[in-house]
Image 1 (cartoon, rainbow, N blue to C red):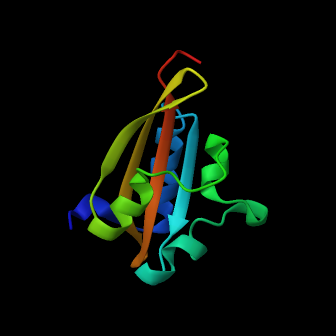
Image 2: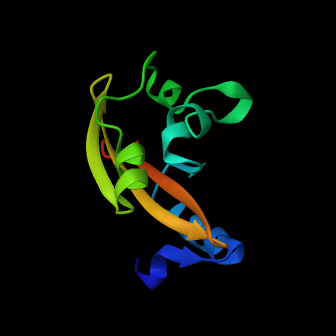
Image 3: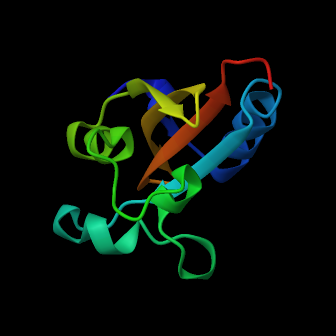
Length: 111
């Protein structure tokens, strides 16, 4: 694991402020036991699943967050939703020695 993948909570907050200038959406998923990933980190605010952001009823077939969590590497994809193209980057990081995946989403259509 690279040094930039390990950080403190303060360093993460600084990085998120930087990313807010580039990405429209930034989400942080805590990772527990890999076998529990589907249930644990897919749940976000008020019980919504992460794939509701994409107006889906089921998880994405090509979930870069899941792939980044299992490989501990950065993963990316382009996602087309309602005719709009989105860049999605998922990075495995450790914050205060706890594993997370940070997901960065940016619309490439100039919105």
